[in-house]
Length: 64
Image (cartoon, rainbow, N blue to C red; front, side):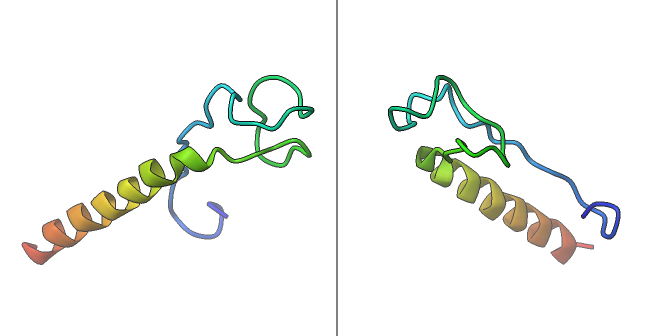
């Protein structure tokens, strides 16, 4: 995607894997892994990041 449009990736981390269901192996898995299980406890962290990023962008562009 970054070859087509400028941007960046933000990695929030997925924890130590303690949130995963039994039987999926130990530790966290990377994306595109059959055992990947997103840690839903990260939703407030991720959404807060994007809200603050948008607020900062909008406040700085308003003064330009």
